[in-house]
Length: 352
Image (cartoon, rainbow, N blue to C red):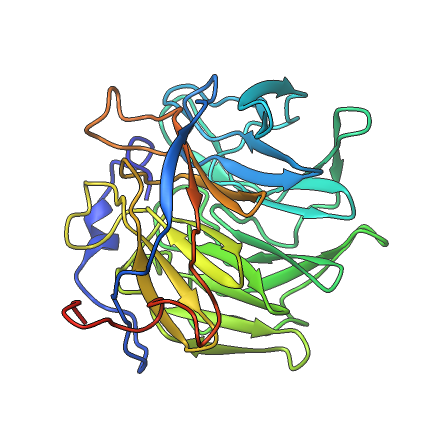
């Protein structure tokens, strides 16, 4: 899962197998949509966390091995510039990020050791932009390295992740817990239904009042499967899988569509993916959109002004591999409407 931190059999998580799901994926190219280069971050970051708060995109943590920054950078699309914000209290990579009630939360992740291993974290800290400061809040009930994080119904959900202090086994979680800022407490997984799949280093997005868990690793396999949580019924349901198995991907929601960007796949597990695909809930289908300019594994994704920003990550073919570069996707006429362009359906001559 971690290219430098985990020299142990990365191939175990790369064995060729597709996630179990009965829905076909559509790989038609969607209309319009384009990427442009944005200002780079000051720090190279893989497995960073990204969140958007008050019209500002924040990038935090991650690593440029052997460096594990606590630094946080804030991006303004109006000026296309980055500025430093207050450092996190704990160095974190593979961290989940969510925004709730005007506060940005850094959830779990892992902390690196000098010997190149890492240990997962249960701790959570909250950033208050008014005074540019971080404070620890209640920890999760479980350590979670590589959790997915989403905000739904006034709660902050932490989904899956890895709880494995020594990387000796594959303790990948399917459990879910939720944070209530009003009480500073977490509702444990005994109250929230677990996912169908064990997942770590997945993408999570909230769309239409539902929480989507996208791809990731089960410990032995990379996943294309996608499942959706309905808080009203406390149930998870499998929906159409992606066209590509992806781990360490980024997910964002814009214009009624859920986008899955980059990561690393199974056909060539040592080359980062540039491909991007979008899920249309109206048709329960995925379609490829314009790819990023460079493949990115362990990137951070955030949506600002309707645009999808892809920040940092890793690409073995670029410099020392670790990326500070950032690019932004303009959805163009991507649409979640059944009457929209080709998204979710194949046009004549396009590959199914």
